[in-house]
Amino acid sequence: MATTRIISMHVNQGKTIAQCLSDRTEYAKNPEKTKGGELISCYACDPHTADAEFLLSKQRYAILTGRRQKNDVIAYQARQSFKPGEITPEDANKVGYEFASRFLKGKHAFIVATHVDKRHIHNHIIWNSTTLDCTHKFRDFRGSGKAVARLSDMICMEHSLSVVQHPRLGNNSYNKWLGNRAKLSHRDLLCKAIDEALAKKPDSYEALLKLLEAEGYSISRGTNITFCMTGQKNIRLRSLGEAYSEAALRAVIAGQRHHTPRKKRAAAVKEKQKPSLLIDIQAKLDEGKGVGYQRWASVFNLKQMAQTVLFLQEHSFADYEELASKADSLTEQIKELRDTIKRSEQRMSEVQVLKTHIINYAKTRETFAAYRKSGYAKSFLEEHEPEILLHRAAKKHFNELGLKKLPTVKNLQTEYAELLAAKKEAYAQLHTLRDEQRELLIHRANIEQILGIQKEQRDKEQERKEPAEMKHE
Image (cartoon, rainbow, N blue to C red; front, side, top):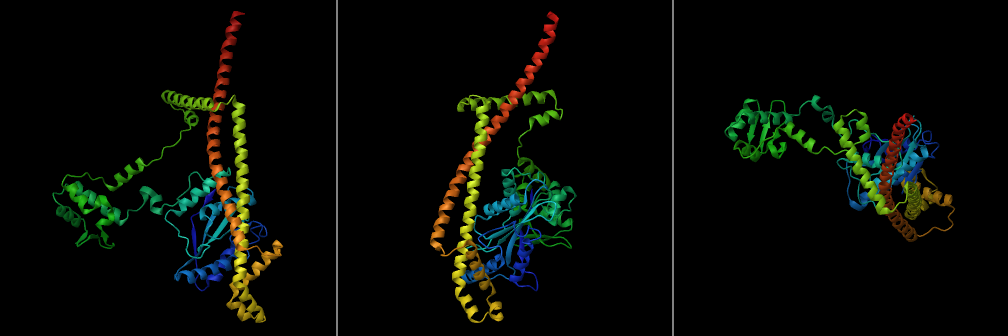
């Protein structure tokens, strides 16, 4: 499964915020793409009036904070794509909802629309840039694309879905993706010039600067030393990093410090930070490694098996069937906990939506009464359209639920708090069971490997015995 970066939505030229919000949400909710709206789920908003609710929250944000931005982000979007034939549209929507819930942590209203008009099922996840309490905005932080992809992959693996093993480009810039084919930046060229000048062993800092001037750089020796090449912008020495600071360069010239050119230093850091990978021994053996490697792999397997034996001794498993039964039992418990969490989240979402409608209904009651008193005047509607839409949506929601008497906001908040506490407790149990399950599955796989090896050895021994017995006959 692939997840794109976070996409910020701005106001298009010549359109209002309301029009832009409506355009974006309507595209996501397109009934032809979402099975007539069946594949739409929301948190803290109603799918029919999500755009109006987003708009009203921004108006409240401006009133509460006094902040107004010229080029404000009105909403954000993330997209998810699934491998064809791997997941049903309904489950894809649930995965999208789970992703948005865990990423936004319940602070922003969002809508998840699952599209089935393409060969690959995909989600459009749109969330309000303003928080539910209308006092803060979502910040598209540095590295958000990587965080989104990581969380999405984690949820995918939890649901036994495939993930993109080697994504292309990712968060790298085009030049980084090109690698050695990329054109050097002006800073890289300056660093290269300094490296070459240092290689000539200048006897003083001023001599180093003269070597750089000979390469065509004009140097401004003010508070901040600045370099400039014809046709290029000024580059401050301090912007090149600590290794190229004036103090560092003076220390190198004086023989008090070793200088590593930028490319070599970057390669060394990359090598140092290279992550350790779990080795698939069997795959490596299949590649035709030498006898020495096979001997090492055999020792590695023995260590793994020793850990499994100790595990069996500590947990007093009588046989393989008992361990396998325990692993299967944990899998069922994890499934039940996940279902419990999903039911809690669904009810929490219902409570949040109902609470939102009750609050909206109370806040827009007077406006709607005035609208009715005006004889449903078109001019009044145009002036107060968000409030009127919210009031009508609230009444429709109450009618759909068949509510004769509305619950109090306080009671809903109490129920929500209880559900949240139960959900947190269930998550804690889930994490504990997952760790236990993971350990069991590892040792179960090791035991299966042991049994397979032992069976193969018995077959070979039997083959050796048969010719010997035939000779005696």
